[in-house]
Length: 143
Image (tube, rainbow, N blue to C red; front, side, top):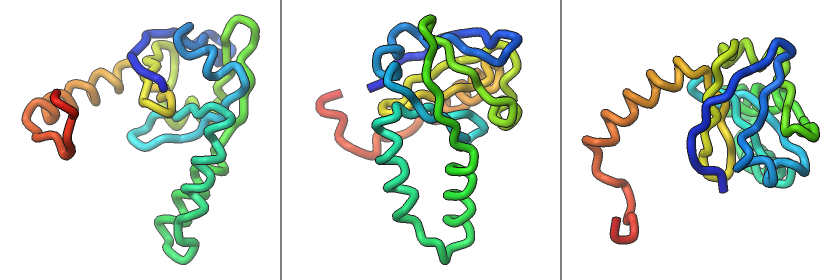
């Protein structure tokens, strides 16, 4: 599971050093692709099959579902972290998520999200405001 929020910098070659807390889970390879809210999602290679299974369950006769599958799969980029824990983010994915220099790496349970830091701050502020005023939609186990 991926937890936490980390501030990192994209180098001039489009490389990002993964947080040390995430490296072991991603050392076997990963697949990154577009995510909702203009971020990128990073999935461990072995978990990507589960993502594909979910995509395969969508209806090819539904225009929006078909589009979603196409965008997720056509944007998917397999990557192997180097010995320093760096990954290269392709330009087309950097453009989609407006990744320029300052990156926030977000642990999102079974995946990692890569956000432009300014966009993440805006999203986080809005989401925390809503979160503070929302009843939990499920039992939080004594929370």
